[in-house]
Image (cartoon, rainbow, N blue to C red; front, side):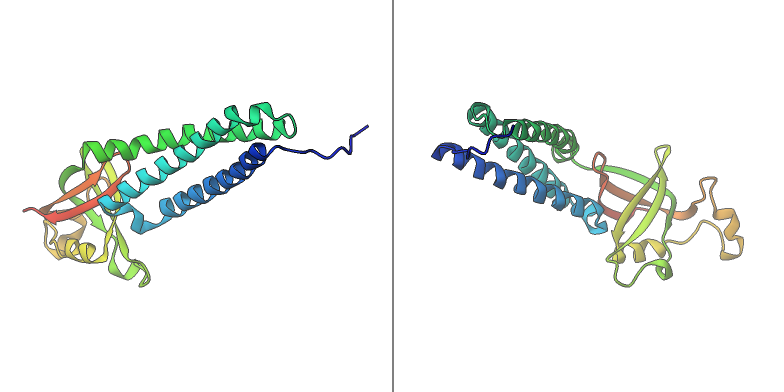
Length: 206
């Protein structure tokens, strides 16, 4: 038979319960922000996004750590709803583990810096295929034995489209590589952050 006895918490326990609610809400908002950040094309351009991604990971880890400390300091002694708090503890532990794993990529880029590749085998998305509402265009290139895909600002894409092919327009087919990309008469340099795959800059080097 279930008890109808009202659960009474002490002031400190009540404050801890309210703090837990805020921490859950904060974790949801931070991870929702990260999801939005991850799926925006513009978030894949510039070092500021490496910093922003790292900051979101740090914020999420701190929130998770705060709840873990709160649990062992307060909730472990509260019998009412203890099972609920144990479930939340597991959720926060998992969140912290995921954020540490995800944040390691941004940290590696922050401390390791960007990487540069140089190639003349690349294809820029035709201007006609880029939505007028988009701030970016896609570039696919082949360098160091692998295909790479980056979102670049429209102005950069327009500049790269001007790089001539290594053959005359009539021999266009001969410019198509075995990777389905185009060979150009000049090479381009692409700087990017290798772990988060965030684009930094592009320039024609030859």
